[in-house]
Length: 469
Image (cartoon, rainbow, N blue to C red; front, side, top):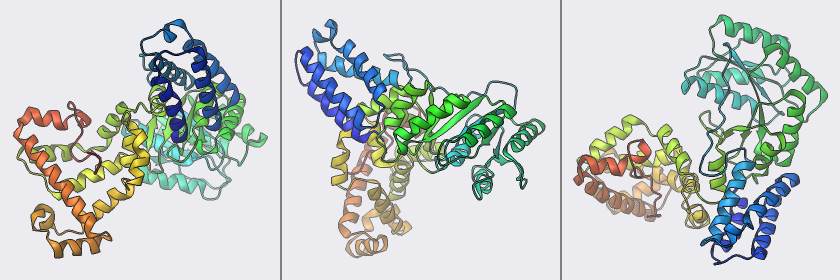
């Protein structure tokens, strides 16, 4: 999401940064280009007008036009404007994300609403899993969707996958009665949170709103979260506005933000509804859920990267035991192809090279070059396949891999001998680096490995993209 918008805004603002002094006409032209970029990204017209007026007023101030770096100041002003549009605090005071409200006497009800196909049921399971695993809450899920075939069974299966309890299904029971039974089960079972997954429709209608309002009255939820598909663009904003006016939303969760959406929905929703965007669904898996940080999203849009999110993602995905094991091996100057395979898997868990590049400042613009050089998710999978096609002896001692072995490995992995050679060369470079790190001792090792594992600074070995050194 935001790729096209990021590219257009990046080129407009880069033009300003390259100039020395700025005239008011320069700012006017840049704002026209920014306005066009936002409209093409499907941002609502009233939101664009307010944003441009606000940014332009600040950007033509005397302190900007007479600044030593006026272009940089305009970029900063645009960044702060995006943060405010997304509901955050501008300036250096980065606002914390608005988390799920769990205040109140348990069990606290969370009501999930939205149109059919927006990803409500999967999002319900994602949030429940996170509350249970990260926040140590006892969670019960209940499906109130008695219309869509197998909707209740779907939540039950997701509950089993997420290891979260689900309310037993009673045939022919109506949504309001299911909600009352869920809250009663929550109280008797000592649950902290009860998540209610309501039915959706293909469009907003009176029957849908009446039902949601009745469930709200029965469950008195602390949160009413709208699940909206980022891919639907401006329609998602209209849906959010309708739900907010009829039942009163407390927050929004955007799904499919990993897709090829233009991003306008995310930029418009907060401004139109005044409801905070709380969560982002960044994939189909149950652990692919992120908090919404306005300042970090604004940074990504403007190509400033999002190192903080990268570090947090690394801490969540890198296994502590594996990190300790690798640290001990590197201290001894040891690093084999099994270790490289583990590093490649860690990269894929963190979103692959494209996901990592988008979070590194200034590197997002290299995405096209990466694609041209085939440095993509497919490369990681091919490299893993090459290592998997080797024998344990070959992985532990790559020096024995000569011509005939390379041909066998290439055939077994569906790749070419050239790709096998590239991987072995990459491994040799990394192995040399690991030996140097090992000689640096304990402090040097911690400096080199610590950062993303929560111990200091630096990228874990192997998480630099192959061919991007």
